[in-house]
Image (cartoon, rainbow, N blue to C red; front, side):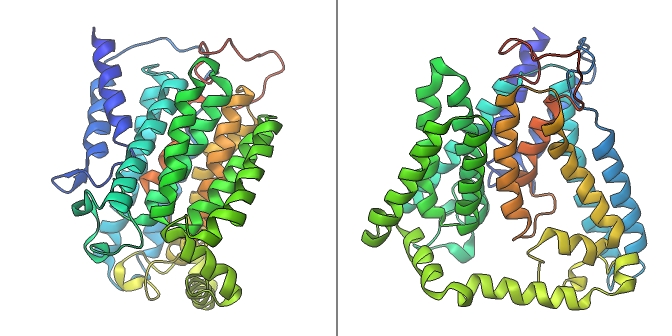
Length: 399
């Protein structure tokens, strides 16, 4: 009975993963529900097969280095109190996501297949809201104040249009990966992917679109689904040849046309390039050693839209290593013993992650990090010559 309670609570928490617009007392619903899962699962005991899930030593070391980098960079911060506050929030966000992933995988509360399905459904629900906002003008009260009344970009159940596009991309890649490997329910997963793809015209995030193309290509290639890859190519060609000239892609049409027309002078890209150049010019030997702090006063004219540069700028080389360790927690699972189907979905999600990580302020954004942490938590860390993938649905890392 207690296990059923934990499963239900964990399922509700996962469903809220991509709905950060739903907040209570200043915290997202996932924060409260995820914390409840971690606390409720603490007394629950279950035997897990050794080597069937990831070790968490790498991300824990990453968190330790984050604290060290924050301690060093406080010396350079223009507002030490705000620096400490923001770093504390960053540390708690990472800790919450990793604790939730640890509990689900180590306590064997949900299988990886169930986790992926719930993430796909969570993303698709946000995509449905995005469609309702863009096509029917409903639920616009959920939009940020500065986007209110704009017909350009919708945010669904996320906080920003860019985040809505990323969530749709994650959900689409996960759904297609599940459709390839879960034959009886393939039509359901295809439907979820179609909803996600359709909604992306209203969030109109170019980063998400390019991340989706890279992620879907990587997923299909790694899964050896060449028919699906061919279909993806035909669909992409059809959009460019038919939908784009006729304006069928809604707000996304104008953004794609603007980028194609202006190329190197496209406003969004140009602004980010200028900011990257300014950030690089401000990085000197002292910055590499100590960082410049993480307070609002330390920002070089706003959030840095490249997390690699931001890591070095705010926390120095120690901060960069911290971020690389957190990322390696997911990337390293591609070298492990997990079934190919699981690693294909992880690889697709990593491509989407990289597209956003390198072009936006990516620290502790749950909708960006949690899919990687969750999938990585279920996959074994090392390749063993004596191990073999279990039957579908039996091993923690199989889907």
